[in-house]
Image (cartoon, rainbow, N blue to C red; front, side, top):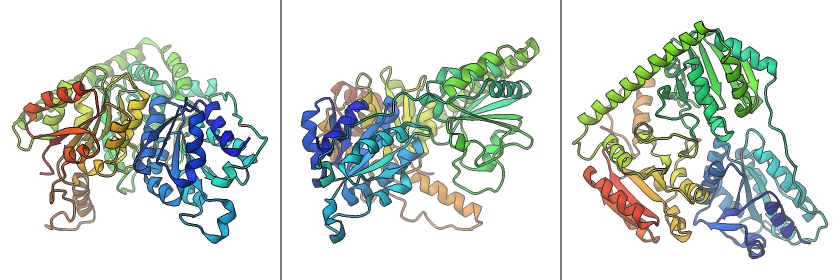
Length: 552
């Protein structure tokens, strides 16, 4: 058998049902063999970044590794920004790229480069088989590394001649691997730490959602009477955003995080990066004297950036149920105190909702419409069970406040801060959830990074509704420029340089039309419901450009 067949057999052996890619000449050994593997589909993208973004979100949505096929050095280069996002999101990806015939290596053929060296900074592991005999073993290791905590992308270069060499070494897989968990003694120590706290708080990352621990986080919060924050950027839902204990996201500065956590004597960190700050503060993110309990499947993350009182290495789906059981044996005095904290959290949650309603009323008739009004109208018009893929950036607080994420799978977001992931990622989410409707909410600046996703949605008959919130500016950059000027004491009345997108104005329905997707521009908030209804009823990809106000 030839190396290319071993590669395809490895994909089938690991349950791969789709390859995301942008075809190229050196990928012919893979593309030609796809005909013989009808259970493995091919999702065509017009740009390698779109292929990686779609695959990353597909892996998040299915919980299984996804495969990406890129084209030599320029194609890998095009995909690297999205690979970085996949690394930050801990998406298990097998990223491949065709490489030129190794017999031409010394002559530096067209499009050639050291692909392994290019990929290494943004993947967990990178390799290139020297012979067809190495393809099976390398693929076994690639799938293991991609799925082992912390999950993430790996890269395999596939030289065209190696794919056509003969070999007797078949595809293999590592087999069933047990999940790590903390010892009973460590769980007892964690329970004692929590029982000794008077005002605990929880900050959760994405791990509980990925590992099936969502209900355990809810149970923990309710048992101990703690507010639950999520990381500043999150890819999935680890806690319901309408629960009385939900407290929003942590800031991107240590001092602001410490202020938010003031008064809490214990901070419980569940399966996240902790912390991805934007600005340097030189202070701890934790209140003075607070204890820190960190639970993470990746032991290397525990205590890496700050000291912890106790760290538990293992999957939250195994640790949290045992921890909850231990806590539920507490005495009545402790239970009464936790119940009082829960009542206070419910009252605070209601106050936040009342304040948001009052603020919306003030902005009700703004022209252009405010982001809050736009999201209010969108929330009223969405069908039940709609999945939200969010890359709204500066409107993300309104998106999180108005829409309902009750379970994992209701929401997917971008990690890493690189833009363009949202509308590309929606492709993967819709493929993973063909029985549910998907909306992708993106800023106009972000959408332009992967606008080719419209074509892939039409080509593969994916009924995604793309909602482009058009403020015609890079609003987040304007906010950050304000912060920069204040932090570095730069007194300035200068305008915001090169941060506007209005000359000429972008026209997303026109762009989408050229790629086979119909759309419309909405400027009046009263028209949003009808426009969304038309988009959903079309049962095909549609684009709505909703014009909103920019930075005041």
